[in-house]
Length: 113
Length: 115
Image (cartoon, rainbow over all chains, first blue to last red; front, side, top):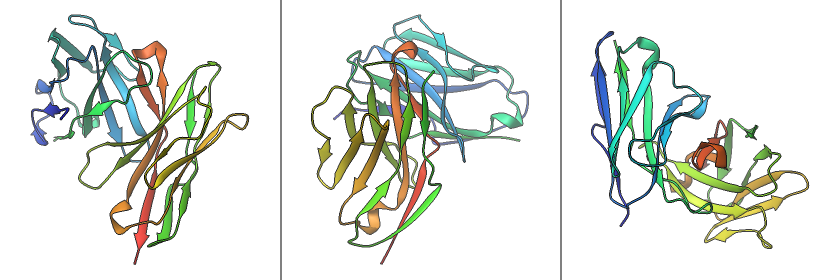
């Protein structure tokens, strides 16, 4: 059974803290993604990676960075958390085939106070 | 640039009835893929159905089917025989080749199935 796991389901951090969100997939997928989900806005792409050590900005990269040192792991980093980064964060992965579905992790609900 | 539009923020349907969730899209790519995902209140994203732009037939998966009208650029999801467990958010999405095959999502439709 395919699996994408995220390090935390719920996280509460203070403004200015450095925050790490970890995502691991066990399907040997090349492509991995971080999305942010806010009510009324759907899911928006923050960053994606199509290979180890490769990363590309998505639609809303400001305030975020990522790291992909191993194929199975893709980390999202909030260098200095702000209250407007309170959101649901979803990680996903997919193989390179165009028609294949994207597999999502359970999500991390981050609250920045 | 691609755009996905879901015009129904919320929908109600009675148990055992069929319901159609609307999705229109805009793209200049001749080849594209459309997806529908379900998100229950627990938060996980569940893949429902896929339609490729060159597929000859409309996609079906159990109680889910796609009413794909290419000329109108619409890909409506039809859920037959609704069940209480179908209450969830539903997202239409299109694959973006320029973003490593990321998905561009619509804003979603909240479906409530009533007894």
